[in-house]
Amino acid sequence: MASILVTGCAGFIGSHLAERLLHDGHRVVGLDNFDPFYDRAYKQQNLALCLAHPRFSFHEADLRHGLDAVVDALPADPVEVVVHLAAKAGVGPSVKDPMGYLENNVLGTTTLLEWMRHRDIQKLFFASSSSVYGNTPAHPFREDMNLLATCISPYAASKLSGEQLTYTYHHLYGLDVLNARFFTVYGPRQRPDLAIHKFVRLLQDGQPIPVFGNGTTARDYTFVSDTVDGIARGVQYLLEHSGVYETLNLGNSQPISLLDLIAAVGTAVGVEPELAFQPMQAGDVDITYADISKARRLLGYAPQTSLAEGLAEFVEWLNKVAYTPAT
Image (tube, rainbow, N blue to C red; front, side):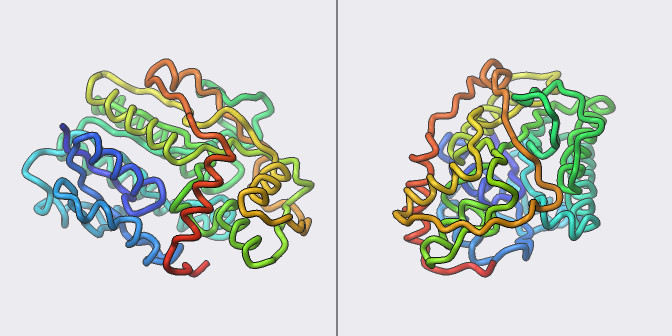
């Protein structure tokens, strides 16, 4: 049993991870700043199970302002691993607000790394993104690809900057690091601005589905429990190894085109989609496609959930949600 700090614990992935880590027997300290990107009530409901657990403690804090204010409230047992999920997310919004993304994702990460250094916390799991690959022409994406000129959105640039910062702290201060590039995570509690969530709501409301481009763009949709399993395995790997600096893809290695996704969502909802074609959005990439062989080798990572199964679970969850978040 370890004491693990999870930043962004009230979010989509963070809340699922906190529950998984508690289930695995760990103590979890959760941090979240309830960024107003979407309805706070959403995140409060995400945390309901964790807040009722005796090994969970929560602190509302903004990484940009430092963590000294919550240090005294941390449990007596020292934090052994930090899982850094907190970030301002979304490719499209980052094009409209690049300064906000760089401030949150780069400055916030630097502040966290400095806090870890001064508190002698030596193990970090950092959440990066498949966005860092941009429109790299070779598929599937491998972790050793040259990414010097691939980022086509401020969000992607902020995540690649985070990876570079973690290497700096590994090199200078011996920080053990796993960087994980997430690939289009979906499932219960997904943010309301993301495609699957929006598509389901539009179909249920009898509205057409916007199709940006010609519908051939593809994403490597990965169900949240599979991503969380990869993170939990990564935490265990960090606890058991030293001298670590690795970057891993946590995807599904099965890209799905936008038109095929919409058809699958229609099947899950039981509604024939009506399509509304629109121009491509700035910053969007053509495809994401993860080579997951390294994560399989190091962590035993093996996604288990098919798209049809994951969509059915998401629709079931959404139909039970007791509120309608602002979007």
